[in-house]
Length: 78
Image (cartoon, rainbow, N blue to C red; front, side, top):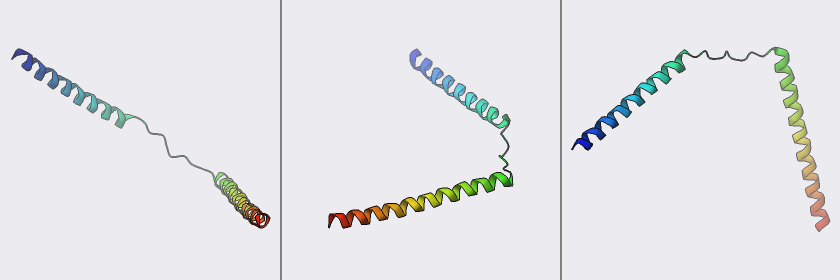
């Protein structure tokens, strides 16, 4: 009987410590300073758009080249 009482007390203590730890972690997370949102200059935005456009054009060129190779392969097989 004493072991059962000890087990119940132990489980309750572990539970209370876990609750306290969770509360402490939550309060710690709320007080942390969060970084500000990154700000980009118009030049950086324009440069990024140019790079994305170049990537899209290269992708279209590769797709067109792949289609030409596929057609040439089909003609070669026939």
